[in-house]
Image (cartoon, rainbow over all chains, first blue to last red; front, side, top):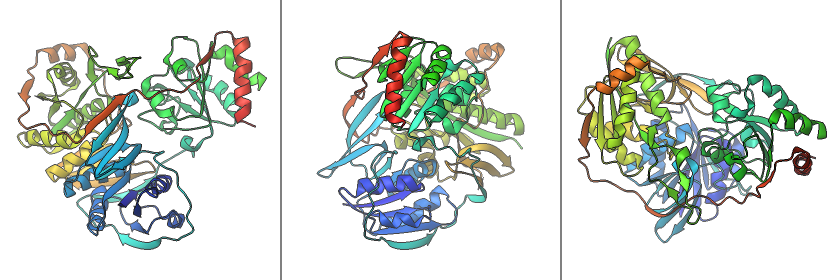
Length: 293
Length: 248
């Protein structure tokens, strides 16, 4: 099998290469410029230069694909998803979105992805040749051998980029955190965050939040939102405080190693998705917990 | 200058109300009500704001089923002028949905097509690009801000790490995100008026295209230990123990 990989994200590029290495030879195309990517087993790494417009990136992928590849793997990012649909349309090849696991069975492809907001896993058989894959699809494995390196200019198209500004970020990347203290609607008021911050400091964790906390109440910034529509996290320890555990949230933290939940409603669904749970008022339990740590 | 705006909306089953059959692991979809998909509301809001700013008309198009009339009425209450429901939706296949929508869009005068960038059920996030590619229009994706200047759309694309200001000639497709705006709650008067308004319902006139064979569709097994304490004095020491194992 020969795979063409596109990713505009360094970590995802490594993960996809790690997965592809199991059964394929592969080329990576990326808008990232980190030369580390030359040491993850690709035959060739093509560094794309120029404006990151999906249709123009799509055209470069199509020209490369026509040189002789079996399938295309694209990281599921805002640009990746647009590129994937563009390429699938233009090449008239079948596609499969949001894949977290795939294998070949003869000339069929067997994939797994979440559906119904993360409630169920769909296992499907298809003729898909273009896949968008989600974080966690594989793990990057360092290789001794250095990939061939090429540079390619992305062609211009009808969309003009006037300016590119890095996103104003507070510099947090909860996807990489080993310990996360996450809060939900149960916090009740923004001032409650002071208490959560103390706990986060004690456990050397990052603070995260559910959708209502980040998007509806704006108590935390959107980059701290864990969920199906937010960040997918996989820390060693996830402490869920005042989080009811709706599927939208569970889908973002399901891969955490150990989950602790504190909630005053003993029927909250989070207690079905935790290893250790405490039914208690967080304003009573958390100060005690901080004291005991 | 007034614009003809098409907004694409979607209904989804109310995900939080879907129960799982404990014996088989299969989802129970019978009797689950449909609701307005979140990002479709952001799309309607964006479309109506453009109409309010520049003038023009907003037409909503949905590929769904007869139950979609409730969602269409909500869209009317938010300021949509006219609405079409194409019935016959059976499964998520963004490439086919794009084909169905593109066919309808070609019958309606338009300068701008707005839709949500991903929907909360399968999150494939590919409809906008499929649609733009099939219509041969440019796509301004994940637009945080939208402005129209004569025959050009200007949008800020919010990618994961950057925001890019981009322009594209009209007609174009624009996808919006949950951060683009806060959808309005329509006043009661608008809701009442919306109930009276005509909804155009048309059956699907294309053969359904499927792109996969489903081998299984089940809730993932949760391996969690689920040790729950209701007594704080017993629970907290256990929590401390677990935390200290991880945080050294």
